[in-house]
Length: 109
Image (cartoon, rainbow, N blue to C red):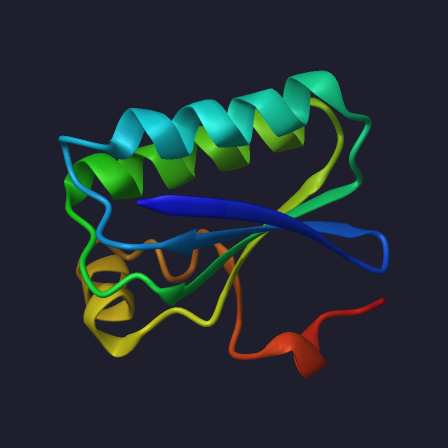
């Protein structure tokens, strides 16, 4: 898995490339926590355009990330979620839990 951080207006975007599963989920969780703990962010968005597969541990990392961001008063969202992953979120009714943007143009700057 490869994780890149970029700025988009007032948002920090964490772009994840690769599958997210039990074997590498700690890398995603650590990246989310490091950004939240080290920086004063208003908004963290996880760009999931290049994630083809995510298991329940990855979903758990996203839930934990959202809770951590919200405890600091920030906003958390998902971006470019592929059909394979959105179907998993729907099964767990988590598509209602997360703010989900289909593309960059939907993000308020």
